[in-house]
Amino acid sequence: MKVPKEIRTYCPRCKKYTPHSVSLYKPGKRRSLAEGERRYRAKQKGYGSKRKPEQKRTAKVTKKQVLKLKCRECGYIIHKKGIRLKKLEIVEKL
Image (cartoon, rainbow, N blue to C red):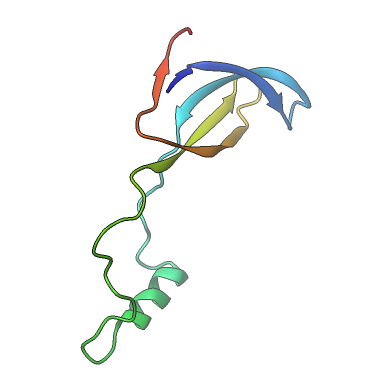
């Protein structure tokens, strides 16, 4: 799917329709000292076996792609709900 580099959409901070630059959302590196990560590691620890079975095969072929829209006027960032795509291409003009 092709997505334009710039989209005119509503900005909740400006309270009007403004141009937004489009990029792809990428999750950051997981922090090993975060509470959830520590809890997960503690739960995985035990007497030889894992608490959750390791998945043999994946059910889904694609991942949900989330668009990150940044307002050109105020810099406010909105995440657009993800859609399942095999390939996402950000193009100059459509």
